[in-house]
Image (cartoon, rainbow, N blue to C red; front, side, top):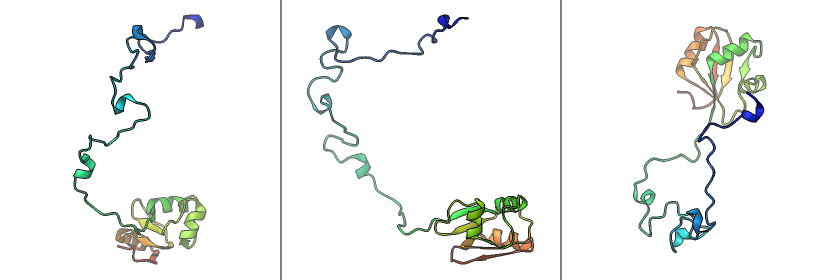
Length: 154
């Protein structure tokens, strides 16, 4: 095979249709837009418009509620904390600030919440905004203490 013999697979590169280039092209004059009307003109975007009828997204009932002052927590699993302790990136008393400094948490948001996924077997004092009940039990079972500072604990 030589460079001058390289070819695309048949049908791989389809030429785009150039519209409005004369009657002989098959897409001349109105360029496939029909005659007159809003959609034949340029600069028209009719997304949810139904010809004056109430659009379906406005006819359907709305359900649910998004709490405007909802708290967003940075979530950390116990298994990851254990991994960082094993790699000597965390030691001693573990707070939200030490979690950020070690790189385990990118930013605190409204606080850090610890969940129980993974194994935890180090005696450590952890103080965070919130934690699941199973996470608190897992830390205490390992001989440590997990304290929460907010009502985020379940």
